[in-house]
Image 1 (cartoon, rainbow, N blue to C red):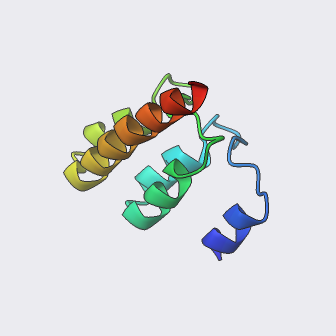
Image 2: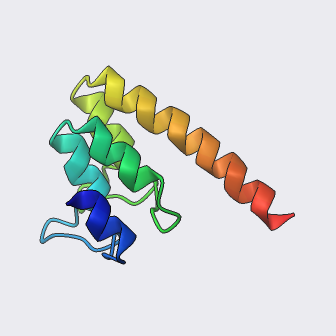
Length: 88
Protein backbone atom coordinates (compact mmCIF):
# COMPACT_ATOMS: atom_id res chain seq x y z
CA UNK A 1 0.00 0.00 0.00
CA UNK A 2 2.79 2.41 0.91
CA UNK A 3 4.61 1.87 -2.38
CA UNK A 4 1.34 2.47 -4.24
CA UNK A 5 0.80 5.74 -2.38
CA UNK A 6 4.37 6.84 -2.98
CA UNK A 7 4.10 6.03 -6.68
CA UNK A 8 0.84 7.99 -6.96
CA UNK A 9 1.94 11.27 -5.47
CA UNK A 10 1.24 11.17 -1.76
CA UNK A 11 2.74 14.25 -0.07
CA UNK A 12 5.79 12.87 1.74
CA UNK A 13 6.57 16.31 3.18
CA UNK A 14 3.34 16.66 5.14
CA UNK A 15 3.56 16.65 8.93
CA UNK A 16 1.30 15.51 11.73
CA UNK A 17 0.13 17.68 14.64
CA UNK A 18 3.53 17.25 16.35
CA UNK A 19 5.46 18.25 13.24
CA UNK A 20 6.57 14.69 12.52
CA UNK A 21 7.17 13.74 8.91
CA UNK A 22 6.41 10.36 7.38
CA UNK A 23 10.12 9.57 7.63
CA UNK A 24 10.26 10.31 11.35
CA UNK A 25 7.11 8.23 11.92
CA UNK A 26 8.59 5.34 9.91
CA UNK A 27 11.68 5.42 12.11
CA UNK A 28 9.53 5.49 15.24
CA UNK A 29 7.62 2.46 13.93
CA UNK A 30 10.98 0.72 13.40
CA UNK A 31 10.09 -0.07 9.81
CA UNK A 32 13.30 -0.14 7.72
CA UNK A 33 11.45 -1.00 4.50
CA UNK A 34 9.28 2.10 4.84
CA UNK A 35 12.30 4.22 5.76
CA UNK A 36 14.09 3.00 2.64
CA UNK A 37 11.05 3.63 0.42
CA UNK A 38 10.67 7.17 1.76
CA UNK A 39 14.37 7.95 1.41
CA UNK A 40 14.18 6.99 -2.26
CA UNK A 41 11.80 9.89 -2.92
CA UNK A 42 13.46 13.06 -4.22
CA UNK A 43 11.05 15.22 -2.21
CA UNK A 44 12.20 13.87 1.16
CA UNK A 45 14.11 16.37 3.25
CA UNK A 46 16.36 14.23 5.42
CA UNK A 47 17.12 17.20 7.65
CA UNK A 48 13.47 18.05 8.33
CA UNK A 49 12.82 18.12 12.07
CA UNK A 50 9.75 17.80 14.27
CA UNK A 51 8.59 20.45 16.77
CA UNK A 52 11.26 19.28 19.23
CA UNK A 53 14.03 19.67 16.66
CA UNK A 54 14.53 15.93 16.09
CA UNK A 55 15.29 14.58 12.63
CA UNK A 56 14.60 10.99 11.58
CA UNK A 57 18.26 10.07 12.04
CA UNK A 58 18.29 11.60 15.52
CA UNK A 59 15.21 9.56 16.44
CA UNK A 60 16.87 6.37 15.17
CA UNK A 61 20.01 7.07 17.20
CA UNK A 62 17.98 7.98 20.27
CA UNK A 63 16.13 4.68 20.02
CA UNK A 64 19.43 2.85 19.54
CA UNK A 65 18.06 1.45 16.29
CA UNK A 66 21.37 0.83 14.57
CA UNK A 67 19.84 -0.84 11.52
CA UNK A 68 17.63 2.13 10.70
CA UNK A 69 20.35 4.61 11.59
CA UNK A 70 22.85 2.83 9.31
CA UNK A 71 20.27 2.45 6.53
CA UNK A 72 19.34 6.12 6.78
CA UNK A 73 22.94 7.28 6.84
CA UNK A 74 23.99 5.11 3.88
CA UNK A 75 20.97 5.96 1.76
CA UNK A 76 21.23 9.65 2.60
CA UNK A 77 24.89 9.68 1.60
CA UNK A 78 24.07 7.94 -1.69
CA UNK A 79 21.11 10.23 -2.42
CA UNK A 80 23.07 13.39 -1.68
CA UNK A 81 25.81 12.25 -4.08
CA UNK A 82 23.23 11.40 -6.74
CA UNK A 83 21.50 14.77 -6.36
CA UNK A 84 24.79 16.63 -6.62
CA UNK A 85 25.63 14.64 -9.77
CA UNK A 86 22.28 15.67 -11.30
CA UNK A 87 23.31 19.32 -10.98
CA UNK A 88 26.22 18.86 -13.38
